[in-house]
Length: 257
Ligand code: PGA
Picture 1 (cartoon, rainbow, N blue to C red):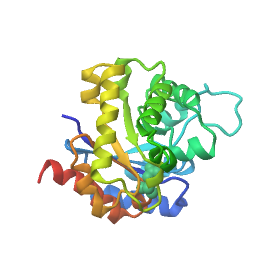
Picture 2: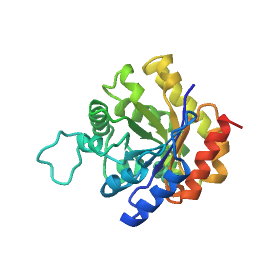
Picture 3: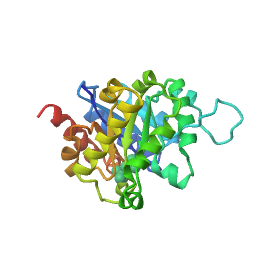
Picture 4: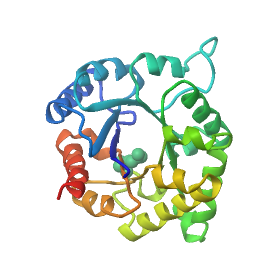
């Protein structure tokens, strides 16, 4: 069975003090890892070390929001996967729509990052998702297929153990508009079919597919209750300990009603 996974994407939010306070509040509330639900938070780079320290010994894992695909060396301003591993990162978010759209990241670049992350021993949360215009034009499946194909180019079936997919419809991110449970379920089922065809039914059966886009305490339970929704990538609501924990508990309650 796929273990539920709730990850918080803090994006470009918090400062040193607020990041540490948020991490401490979460660590207190989730003091040990539980078999049913995996929990991670992905703070901005400058706070990875302090958040990692605040989470030490708790059940919450540390993740980063991006990485360079290059080896350590002369690349001013970039962060290598070796550094993330050194900081105790257990995850790295790649291909987020904000980076695709605003920072010009292409599937070709994202696939290099996925490959670098996996080679460096840090599992990836790979984000895919269509814009509203693409959905309205009936292109959702084609867009998702192209992003999966491009971003996972060169990633073999065995390496998929270390990849989690996040379906994040761009029109639902930070907008307060959430995909309906039916829209989420059908996109997740589509992605799982894609995994089965590109790889094999085992990979499709074991790969976790998270939903992201305005996940809140009041919609988490119904979204996470869908058969192909294995968890959530949470932006805005991950910045409030109470909201994030309510989403984590919603995931837990699906397994232990
Ligand atoms: P949101 O962001 O929950 O604020 O919509 C989700 C994400 O971008 O990962």
